[in-house]
Image 1 (spheres, rainbow, N blue to C red):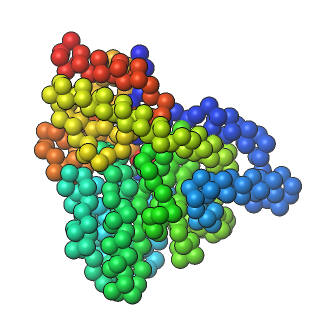
Image 2: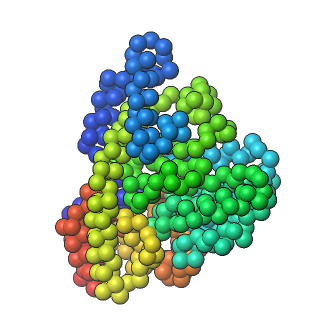
Image 3: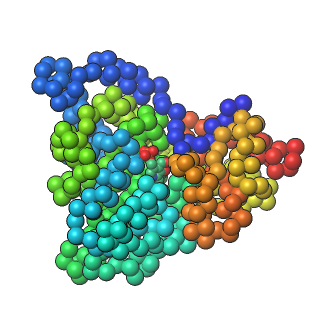
Amino acid sequence: MNLYFDNAATTHISENALKEYIRTSEDFFANPSSVHKPGLNAHKKLDEEREKIASLLKVKSSSIVFTSGATESIASVISSLLFTTPGKIIISAIEHEAVSSWLPLLKQYGWECKELKARNGIISRDDLIAELTPDTKFIGIMAVNNVTGAIEPINELVQCVRDYEKTINRKIFFFADSVQALGKIEYDLTSLDIDGASFSAHKINGPRGIGMLYLKNPSSFRPLSTGGGQERGKRGGTENLPAIAAFRVAMEEWLTDQKKKNETVSEYKLMTINALKELGLEILSPEISSPYILSFASTLPSEVFTRMLSDKGVYASAGSACSNNTKGESEKILLRMGRKPNEAKNAVRLSFSNSTTKEDVEALISILKEIVNGK
Ligand code: PLP
């Protein structure tokens, strides 16, 4: 039995993405910055890949900066604040550590840092409005939470920031970590009016170590790594062209018939929710959450329950798996969402992918029943 339900941690690279990775490594091995023929060919390929990805996301190709992943995209944006006059930064209290871990350093540099409560996992417009002050410069609110799948009302939140800007006559940078949103909920950068967003290929069947930073207005941005001036000066370092090409293939595949795929996964999530409820277990994901993430409170400490699942061939995680201290981090996030300590302690995250089948879900449900009923 091999039932992989940890797709929010990482997904299996798709066959076509892997083939493209190998093909690009062989056919476009040269450095895209080299001015000889193979280098120019690699550069052309890089431009083409950027155009294709931009058109999939319906944004300008100049707004895309390729990075090594979401963590670097986030680091690049937030560290750029250290080069500016300190002000106030507001983030949600349930951000991934890639965002929240920056707060101590920002404080040292004189920034006032505020974390917004997330009652039931959702950031409220009123809480954000109450924190907006004339020295607010940066807001970071994730589009979809990685522990529970909670979908944040980004559009609404951005709108209140844009309204507030009119009273101070200055722009506030709105950043949305969008790692768990791309291809998993309806998510349209063109209609969102955010200034920056982070993405990661390995959450949608792409390779590890490649991600993207979306910048609506790249000219106003001071990068973390400068070096060779690649990515139009926004991210130094030789571009990982094979991974970029494979990311594009994975994105094309994932976004094809996205609505239908999202509906199918929603059905699977609902099947699982119904089974968990029948077993008397508490669902921790809010109603408005990604079809791909389901968090519930098990009957045992999460590391014990996930171990029992693993022994039966079901691979899930204790909360989120993107941190070395996965359990501690997820517990903290769930407590911040207002969950009871024993629910947070026993939390298990099941995460689906487009390749999850109904048979996988049925098998998962019968194993959950076996464990909860002590068989
Ligand atoms: N942000 C969120 C919401 C995530 O779920 C993750 C990874 O799990 C990250 C950021 C970090 O992404 P990466 O592995 O590409 O650095």
